[in-house]
Image 1 (cartoon, rainbow, N blue to C red):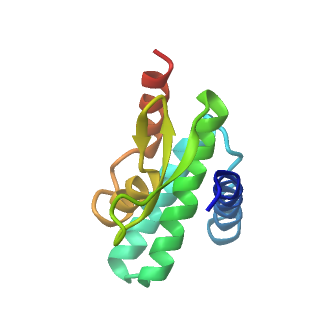
Image 2: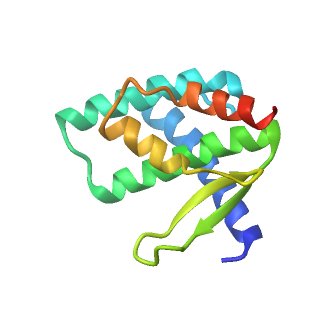
Image 3: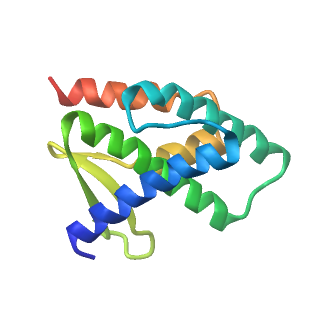
Amino acid sequence: MLNTELTELMQQSAKDAVSYARDEHQVELDLTLESLPLVDVLLSSIAHQQQKQRMSDAHMFALCNIFGAYLGQVFISVVGGEWVHQTADETAPYVSLNYNNKEFPLASLVYHKVTKNPDLSVNDYVRQAISNAMQ
């Protein structure tokens, strides 16, 4: 996949997160730093739903990817960065946000919050990553 195609895919995925939040949870996201606390609340809600009734692997994969893309697009809007398709392990390729030789696997962060630790703050993570990047 060409980098421009991947960039377009991730931009569209972030828009899909905005639509999902609005349509399924009546939460308005606007791809800004100020929206990240809303993403935390929304993902915690999904985590609690997941504990009651497990969603399909495909649904979980899609949610983690669209919200990972959302977090990445917020990061990119503040400091920059690029999406990279990581294929070092051919059995488990993934997409990460790279900035200044640092890798941010944001879909994995979302997965961890939704499946293991609903108290994890994606807001804090992204803000800290931005702060570190700007030093």
